[in-house]
Picture 1 (cartoon, rainbow, N blue to C red):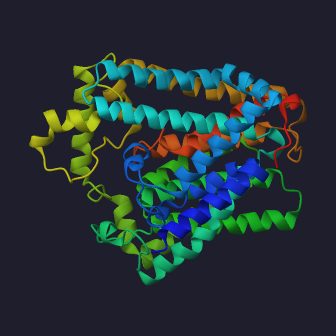
Picture 2: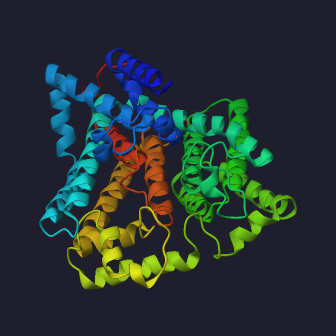
Picture 3: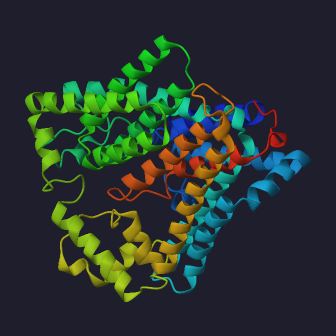
Length: 444
C-alpha cells in the first residue's frame, strides 16, 4: 500500500539533491549500498526490473546521480572539459576495456541474453563511475568515508538487537539454514554486511589521520570497538580474513599503527568472549562444514567446475555472465546445488571461466593502474606527509584503495565485485584525487 508513496518521496528527495546539492548524491550512494532491505520499500516496475534488477535505493540513487552529472555536461563547458580529462585517465580506460571485452563476448556467448544484461549493468556502473568523478572534487574526498563510517555505526543498533534477541528483521527464513545465528541487519547476506563493516573500519583509519583533537581520536577508537563487535556477530569467515588483509595493508600504507593494534587487541578479546558466550560462532570460524547458501563441499565443487570451464575455454571464456548457464549444461547433473543464481562465489574464477585469460589480464591491469595511482599520490605528497596536512591526498587515496581491496578480497568468498558500486566509487575518487584544482566546480 505504501510502496508507491515511498517511491515518489524517494524520487522527490533525490531530485532535490540532483538540482540543489548534486555532490551529496555520492555519499548518499555510499549510504544506500547498506540498505539492500530497500527492495521491499518500492513497487514492482515490470520490464525495467528484468534489465536493472529489483528496485532499490542504491539503483535509484545511481540513476539520479548519472542524470545529475550528465545533464550538467550538456549545459556546462567547464563540465565538458572535466569529462574529457576523466575519459583520458588510464584508470578510466582500463575499466572501459574490461566492459568492452564483456560486450564483445556476446559474439560467442553461451547465453546471449545474460551477456547483454551483464554488459548493460556494467555500463550503468561505469556511468556511475564517470558521474562520481564529475561531481566530486578532492577537497570533499573525505565525505564518502564519513558517510560509510556513520552508516556502519548506525547499523550497530540493528546488529545488537538481532544478536541479543535472535530475531532477524529481514531474510531470517533464508539465514536459518544454519544453526548459528548470523546477523545481517539490512543486507541480504551476512558476508556482504561484514564487507560494509570493514569499509567502515577502513574509513575510521583514514578519518583518524585528519583528526587533531585527542578526544576525537578516543571517540574513533571507541567506534572501532563497536564496528568490530558488529563484525563478530556476522559470523563471516571471509569477513575476518578480509579484515586481516586490510589491517596488514593499513600497517604498510598508513601511519596510524596504534589504531590497527587496537583492532587486533580488541579482536583477540572478542575471540575469548565469543568462546564463552557464543561457542557456536567460534565453532563456525574453525570449521568449513557450514556455509550461508552452500556447504563447503558444494562450494568446492563450484570452484572445480569454474576451473574445468576455464580449461575448456582458456583464452576468451564462455561469455560474460554465462557461468550459471555453462554449469547447468555440463555439471549440474553431477551434484545437487541449491536453486537460484549459481556462481563460483570467487571473482577470479568467475572471470577466468567467463572471459578467460584475456579477462584475467585486464583484471590484473586494473589493479596495476590502481596501485600505480597510489604510488603516484605518495610521490607527489612525500614532501608534506604530516599526519594533519589536509591538502595531502595520499591518505585519502590509500583509503579508497583499501575500499577497492576490501570489495575484491571479500568477493573471493562472495563473488560480488564489479557489481558493487563501492568499487566504482573508489576508482572514481582515485581519478578525482589526480585532477588539478582548476577542475573544481561549485556543486554543493
